[in-house]
Image (cartoon, rainbow, N blue to C red; front, side, top):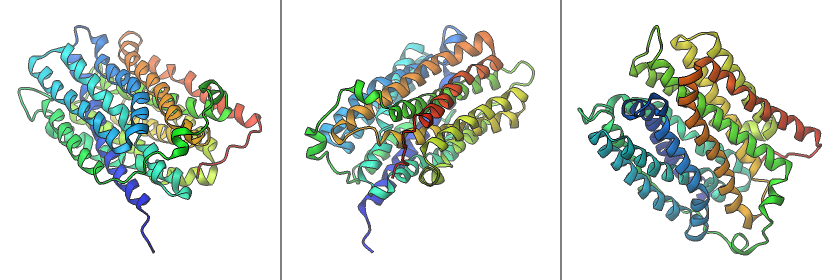
Length: 399
């Protein structure tokens, strides 16, 4: 049987996704604590990572449009150069103990991370028709490596450049960005065809009024936003706990369980979507996030926190993957770059707002109020899910 090059490209993109997500884990494990150490106020502890998500948001549309012009691989590599500059600047900022420079480095890294979010769409471009939904989930499955390697690398490298604490983490990130460039040079993603470049294009307002687009966007937006709010506040809660603060290795262990929860289901999420449909998988993810809140409210032991973080990770996987595959049926070929870029703009714009809010909400109203705050977003996703069912609009599972 002839080997389909699409499967090879999905495997290579999964490797890139693994390294990209490992870098995100490294940023998540250290940025809040670095911000807490460098910021003039504890309420600004999550400001560097907020800037990262703002830059990620702002880069989504330019990245998508650049890839439409020069191809996926060259577009990814261009933005990786920005990420490498950001990681190098972060090391210098730690050496100088400069909050401002660290914020700038985080923003540059975020620009690269925004481009990396397109790996799942690149997989769709190259995958066989019957394999598209599983291609999305299998590329995201590369994050399983991040769940295992990220916290371990963080624990090993955070004092590697001592006395420049956390500097070694950014050295690891620089190495991974170089490896991603090498892997991308071996991909063979087809360039945009004539229909994609010059086909008919509707206004975004027309596209955005589609019920399927609305549900796809809300699912990805709030699945990612809720996950990010809980994830970023958890290290703050653990390290500043009034009666039994947790050590850094315990924080990293919780992050590991969370990232495994995010990506391990990806080996079956594509199959679940084909078997049960996008809407059912999205609803299951929203219900799982509600259970996460219940676990967080019921206790504050290590295992309460670890289980809750794993649950919100699985919830993100179902809502984000389901939203992504549902989005695939809402646009024509020539609308692809625009819709994908704008979708990610709203998704990561929501993430940026949540990351800025995480430090402030935790600082001013506390851990339990923060958990209660996410319930409204989950109710909105479930309501939209019910609404589209009542429209009697068929929502096919993405192939």
